[in-house]
Image (cartoon, rainbow, N blue to C red):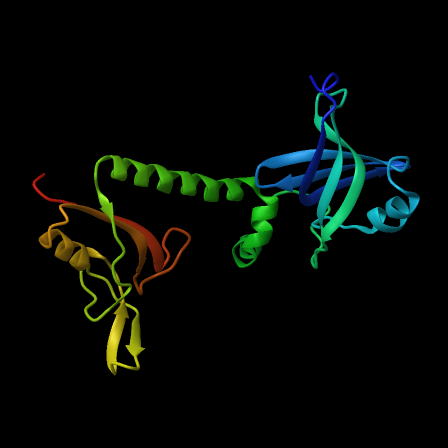
Length: 227
């Protein structure tokens, strides 16, 4: 009950929305955990901060705020600001209409902008992180050992694909970005690692599209005495 428990809080986040109505203003801050609304009044802040600073701050700026936590009449948790700071000024102002970027060229070339604006893109990264976490947890419970095998190899084996070619100056030999960890993982099995796996990057010098990238993450698993 926020009415009974007067709680002062400190927050920080990116300003993604700002509405000024005379001597009051509403700001929406965003961080990795979600959104919070700031309720700002000229009475609570000094006139110099409200008029000369706050009004000139842009969408995309990183702000810090302190104040009393409360709920609006519509039930939205907000902060009645007593202090407001700019922590980092943005060099590129975010668009006024805080919607999805429809231009795929902008989305892929300026991924940071897409992640700020598009929650769906943002969630993809979070979901992927959870998937990797649960996979590792499952493998650990079942007594698999996670390893890392060489990315640069003398023989591009383990799969039928065209490799990326590089050169090792000290050894004076041609080398390849790996197309698969298979051969090295099998050496580990021979050496006595009966349950082994790797989640890492592979590189295949092939076509590129929205569904296939020459650099991708793959999981490979080997288990002895089982089928």
